[in-house]
Image (tube, rainbow, N blue to C red; front, side, top):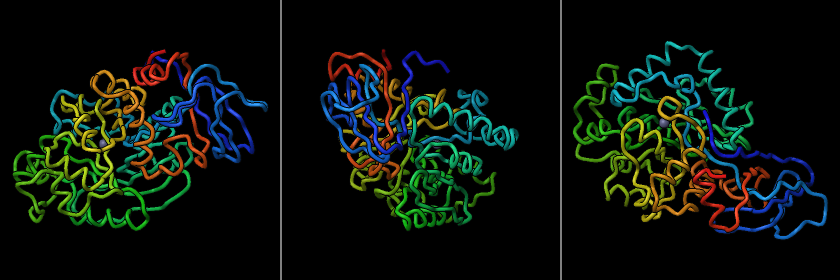
Length: 393
Ligand SMILES: [Zn+2]
């Protein structure tokens, strides 16, 4: 991976008292302080000030102190599949090859590659993640990695399973259903009950592929054949004449504690459902572009009051897990989006999507003293956000 832009430095301050100064403090996309400093006590933000501190401080320079980035949807478990799966043979073939390759590689290889990805995330200031794991290979890794966020144990098929749900200070454990076209309604409802009982987010891929939408709408087609081949009996599922979003809404699965990922195939009515239900939304535009040749309608989402978080999906469909790259891609492909909006997607919206708004996503009094310093020397407030999202010096 090569990155043309300057490396940020990640700080996780737990000391009794520290002062950090920089040319710009960006607590969130609205409040901007030129020449300011952070006052930290016992690992929490105590104050955000403008001016020059009177006591000894760490002076970072002319750049920006800002919240750490949030990758709200990633599969570290699939990092070993980087460059191993052709992206031009269609989605169904991609899924099939992925399952075969994953099985062939074996646990040790998957773990080694995931470890490397974790270090890469930390190096680039992506401190919070929503990790989706089907095999459980990344659970212990994440617990000891320094990364924070939510580990989602993912299930699919028809058996009603029980996962580990546990709310913790650094890394919580919750459950995910794979998708409406791969998981039975009974399984999805049971998983949702488990996560809801602990006040944790439940994650699910929704409206990603045409195959998914066609299957949910028609209850037949290539995906139906694929399921039958894999021994998944879908005959009792309440499918037909509805979109994936409407289908999940009908099951009562869309609420503020659900994280709906992708939303590539959505109708105007679906957008209304998403907005009304206040479901959290995570988009992965680079992965969508590579796998499906299309992009989510972010502008429409924003118009409807939806505030998407950003994810990268895995290295099997995306060339990095770095949210700086995702921001850069969005800035180039959605020229109408305000850079501040893109910045919020990578920070504040991500924290909300993972249920972590009370501890991170912005720099605010009482939140964890996790932050990054991003080197640059901007002259104006607008320049700060533009350089950040376009990955410029
Ligand atoms: Zn995914």
